[in-house]
Length: 607
Image (cartoon, rainbow, N blue to C red; front, side):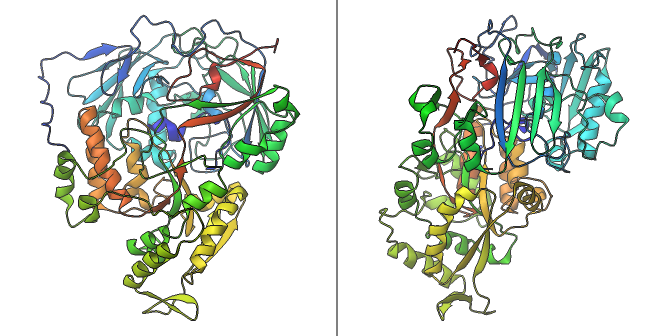
């Protein structure tokens, strides 16, 4: 997943929460000139040429106007989304412009926004962004190289810890000429890094330099994007108004986007209440993550009368991995045999039949729904990678295709119970007086399942009942979103639901997901606590992949190692967006494969 997916995603709705045998490309000759372009593509050609006028998935003549009402779950207490402190409001990404903008119909391409052009040498050891002279903040002051440099250095030293992980290989940033900013890298192996720094949100040095950047704030910050904050009631709602004289409104990357005059995001503490509020017309659109709701929860006058539209919109997004995540920092879950054993006690087939209306596919990869997902036995190219780590990674990664435990869906899991007990016995646990206890310490096997969403309790309760059949006591604790986020930041949990998103171009963000350095870094995304030199090395290989073929091979190798490490009990996925909305919008003819861009819709008053 690209860095921006973690740092500046526009939150429309609140969700739950590769070395092959191929030779490396030769180093380019030093005499080759740098490439000057209007955009960057990680592997291959750009879809849109230098004279393109708009993306294909927008209506360039879409009318402006109207209000779009959205929702979020939980609360917020800061308008600074760049630090670890506080809970930032949803939607803040639309007030800060970035150097580049990714397209939603290409897997790994970006085009200039604040940057008019980009220069990159053949050896990829630096990248230079040339800023548009007309780029402005909302107060009319120009966006300058000094602003870019200050932003980068501030985020790296005072921002969220993830920035340090993303930018660790950037040696320096400097001004070149009147409008140029050059980022110099430690080496040229990190092919994604030029685009990673291109996703940098540009902040005003003059504005933020006079404030304590590390503190939370409810003062609307100075931005440069298509919207500005109009009003807030902390924890209840936030309203954004379109900037009528927005400097970049006519750029090719913006035509047909940002069509609503007003975004309003209302906060709800509970998904059930939020769904009823949607049916009552309190807000306009939601994506649905609960199969039962999608099957039965929308019935009512609005749906029956055609005022509410339900639509499955296919996508080609890798679905990543949702699962019951173990905190392997806990001694209880340090042994992979214990983690594997507990996986036998989650009856997905029963849950899919009885709880999910058969809507889901079992996840058996961290990159489901894409060619990045491993399957079958390792190829020769994958084995060439894995062999370097023999003895450091599970032997099964070489010999056994990963398959999640299965049942017949009847609810009777006797064979799975036997397999689980065998693994637990090997790990030093036995049943005494109807409780599973550690053979050496006598410690009973008990743990807490931390949840944010009450809706998940109906899924976890049957799982805890199966655990109890082996003498394991698992309790469920559902907490409010603020407490949940704080506990997750500090890895204060035994087991929880983790949703690990991925993209078609995995790269630097894998360090935050799996890197040893991130395992104990508060606020990183290595929730399960992976600490493995082999995984660190595999992540580095992915980051340095010279082409798409080698990237796929290297990701397959990492996928196998993670699966056979049993860091999560895999849940499920779907290959489409489930979207419900009030029938008051116009939509472009084309839906892009890699996003759900509600920002390309428009208000249709005749509806």
